[in-house]
Image (cartoon, rainbow, N blue to C red):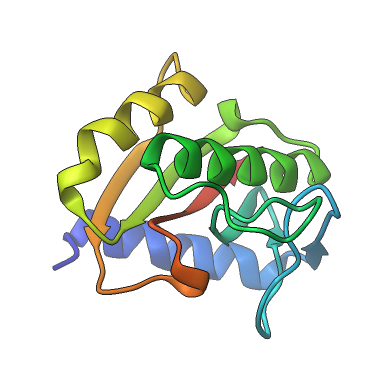
Length: 145
């Protein structure tokens, strides 16, 4: 359940975002969307990055099944999309991590920490039944200019 503070923040983002122009962000340095969505949307002071899965943009193949390799590929993809919007991982304020097995949380966390060494963003981690293309991890992000 969302807290009152979280609801207020989301409402302010939506209200501020409605007044600002909306720009689609895309790059070939991250996998193309596999459905009817954009890699990211840049609106106002925020960039909303769609969930990234561990597909290698060079060949479209899934990274090896080991969670460290998949987490690294996901974060490299996220980094590439943010770069296309002129931002880096240091501008990420919130991530949501989806995992098919929370028993791998510690291992995912080890790799994740390497990409966010100082002042890591707020985060939620959720176990799901399955992810697209058989991925073991997916991460979406919100960044602020």
